[in-house]
Amino acid sequence: KYANLALEIFPSDPDLYLMKGFGKFYFMKDYAGAEKEFLTALKLAQTDSLRSVIYCTLGDNCQRMGNSKQTYAYYRKGLKYDPDNSMLLNNYSYYLSEQNEKLQLADRMSQRACELSPKIPTYIDTRDWVLYRLGRYAEGKTLMQQGIALGKELYLHYGDILYALNDTFMAIFYWEKAKELGYDPEQIDQRIKQAKSK
Image (cartoon, rainbow, N blue to C red; front, side, top):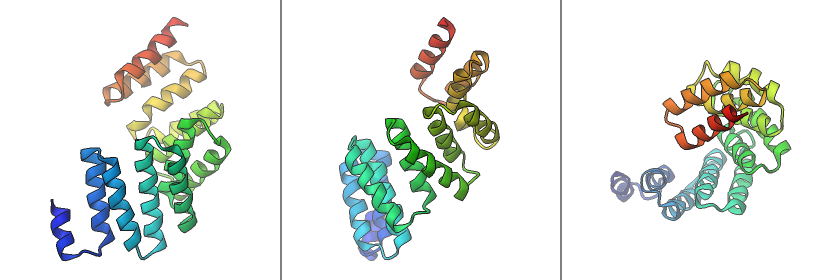
């Protein structure tokens, strides 16, 4: 509502289209509608850094629509405009790791995101998840021990790393902590059940 009112006064402001798109993305889950607003913002963007941010947002939006091909295309375009966009590097590498694809590329991008923004817990979590997918558990454990102090959102993947290193007791401890924070209880219960059955 307020974005629409503002657009009546400032019809060429890309930030307002971004805000409108975020409203549709986060609150209404209208991803097609959000994409339309983001593309309008992209046409109006006047700097490469803003174009990179918008392409990252378009990629994130396409993830929700389940369109991997377009997700990758948007992320690649965003990196052309700003190869050091740490949010884009993080989101792209996390998506690759979730798809279990191009893990060497995900490794390089997640490492670069953490170099650019070393104290952001979600970037550390992504880095850890990429290392997990690559089977580099000990390296992931060391990284997560540093990251746990920065954010509780790391508990789920830290539990996964600990379990991969045969520390079942502490893995269950961190999975339970993740569940208390609102992570999917069904997924966590499956992990715990599997761990206890061994």
